[in-house]
Amino acid sequence: MTDTRKLKPTYAQTIMTHLLAGKTITNMQAYDEYSITCLSQRISELRASGVNIVDEMVTQNGKRFKRYWIDEQVRQGGNHD
Image 1 (cartoon, one colour):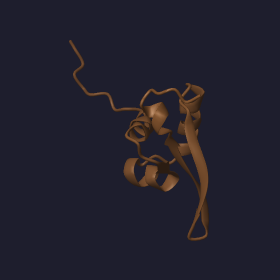
Image 2 (spheres, rainbow, N blue to C red; image 1 turned 135 degrees about the horizontal axis):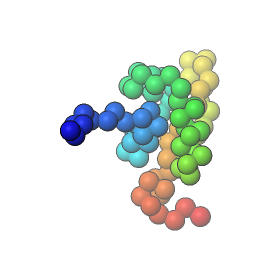
Image 3 (spheres, rainbow, N blue to C red; image 1 turned 180 degrees about the horizontal axis):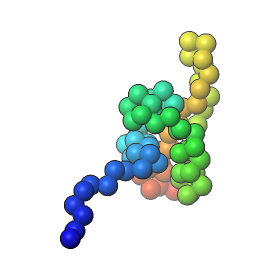
């Protein structure tokens, strides 16, 4: 008997798909869009697997948080040296 259920992507896969689409992501976006509460852990996992994720500290409305993205050259498979 074959299991035909679709496998749900992991949180890291969901974030990777988001970043590869050229989008940035913050903790609030991860929670609002994907119900992910542990973005920094997933970013660390992706970085440990070799993904070059860039981040910056942002201050908005008195709150400080990180915004993550993948550089466009990296997403397109270009040379980023």
